[in-house]
Image (cartoon, rainbow, N blue to C red; front, side, top):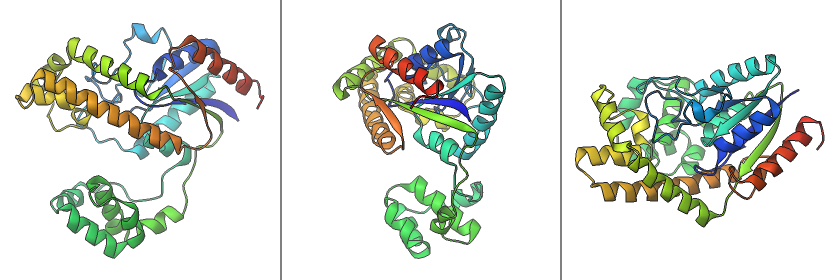
Amino acid sequence: MHPLVAILGPTGSGKSELGLTVAARFSGEIVNFDSIQVYRHFQIGAAKLTEAGRRGVPHHLIDILEPDEVFTAGEFARRAAEVLARIRDRGRLPILVGGTGFYLRALLEGLFPGPTRDEDLRRRLAKRPPQRLHRLLSRLDPHAARKIHPHDTPKMIRALEVILLARRPITELYAEGRRSLEGFSILKVGLLPDREALYDRLDRRTEAMFASGLVEEVRELLARGIPSTVKPFESHGYRQALQNVRGELNLREAVFYAQRNTRHYAKRQITWFRREKDVEWFHGFGDEAAIQEQVLERAAAFLGGSP
């Protein structure tokens, strides 16, 4: 079994810096699992490291898509597995770094064997109000309807898409199991800073993004002909900068709502990752020397075969 380290945690917790530290010590390569960093042209709001900031450490699955390309968790898992295999064959340590928990789970545990997306069917379903979607889901798969919130339209659309295309309840497909990642021994490192300290850092980082030209970047992206409807514009920071460009929010309001929504997103990430199996939690930021030393010590034991 080849070793694999996964560094996870909420946005702003210092995952990128910790990943670089682990990579430098153990001849590693970074594999991104952030759903915004896969898109080209989006830089400031995606918090991408510059080439210089990567300090010579190879990074993968960053800037691999045009902004209007559809990219599912299943496609991420397929591409990531290929990258991991190449890193393994080079005899180097693959280090997964990111905050999109569903991408990580899709890679490590696999996805249920459902049908691929049908854009025409999705558009037809999206025209229906959430209440009608939930009633339809309740009729076709009551168990799935109980687990999906009546206002979570994207999940309801996907569940109905699978049911209508497969002609089977999505619950049955889940029960058939998934194909997990094989050939790797995995160490999951979780970062869990103090909540108030994290929120303060996120507020300051959001202010810095706007101060360093986030609104100007959005104007340039639109001038390139990139539609305002692409997925990256849905992310916190970009959404509010876009609203500022449109005149829907003034700059102060844009920063305020970006800060608030980013804090809420971090809270949801923490909730998701706490459900992740076998995570070893470190209570601090990944750019703190003490946390880095603790993680390096644990990684050394893991790579040496110690428990």
